[in-house]
Amino acid sequence: MNDTARTFLSLGIALGLGVLVPAFFMRMLMPSLERGVPVTNYRGRAVFAGLGVVWLVWAGCAIVVGVAASSIGRTSVLPVLTLLGPLALVAFALGVVDDAYGNGADRGFRGHFSALAHGRLTTGMLKLVGMGVASVVIALILVQMAPWGGGADAGWLRIPGVLLAASAIALTTNFVNLTDLRPGRALKVYTALVFFGAALVPNALAHAGVVEIAGGMRLAIESLTLLVALLGPVFAVWRYDLGERAILGDSGANAMGAVAGALIVIGLPFWGLMAFTLVLVCLNAVSERVSYSAVIDRTRALRWLDNLGRHTDRTPDEPVSALSEHVSRR
Image 1 (tube, one colour):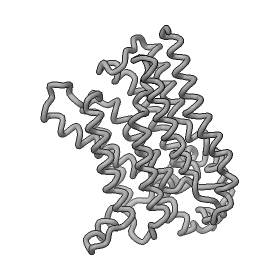
Image 2 (cartoon, rainbow, N blue to C red):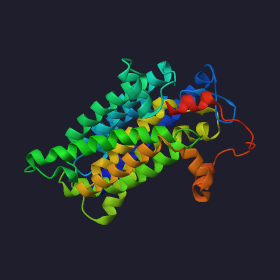
Image 3 (cartoon, one colour):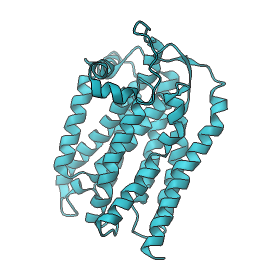
Image 4 (cartoon, rainbow, N blue to C red):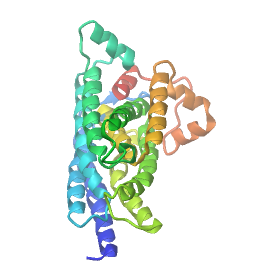
């Protein structure tokens, strides 16, 4: 099989399993989800929980895509999905626990650590610990292939890279979760992040010798193929989220953030990883005192992007439901 045939085969696998299968499952699942107990969103409208289940479907497909791509040679970056799929499963599971059992009384890092100081483990803290452990495991695997790993002779110098990479993955998970307060917002943030990550990964893996890809056009095609696979869940749930029929919940936002964070970490050099982690630390810290929604509403460009594709007929006096903030932010 020549390189052109392998490229088209990889693209077909990414499209079929990464996009079409999740879309089909969500189309079939929506009638069942809509029979569940509704919650109230930020506009006071009744919506249904459960869109995050698309990541359960996608994670299984991603693992199959990665294994299948590995079998057709070292000319595809899709095998990285064998790491991203299991990570999405862990993030999804921790999010389900928080969605199902969290009470929303303890919010933010301050709330969770305060509860822990009083001898009480919140579901949010469980999620933080679980994602922290999962992020360290992924970082330890990525150190063998990512530019920040320093190569086989780096030795103990790899430790700072592993710690930064794990922090970046965990912080991206939390950041995307923090943006899930309005229909479509977290999906847009995830889309922007994976565009950035997909542009970095093929070149990074080629330089590391993990894949054999030569030429700018081949790298661009591999970026496109990876992007297709990663945007499958967005395609599957976009109309339901923006149409205010259902919400992603913690299970969906967690999985999106974990996948996006790990993807970007794969492609960054050490200095880039430091910068990315610093930005995430600042964004997460600011969220403890500043409302992202308030900042977006005051900034014309951000407000336009935030409202893009969404119903905007809410009156200025319409109250924001406390329940919706609780359901989407936990």
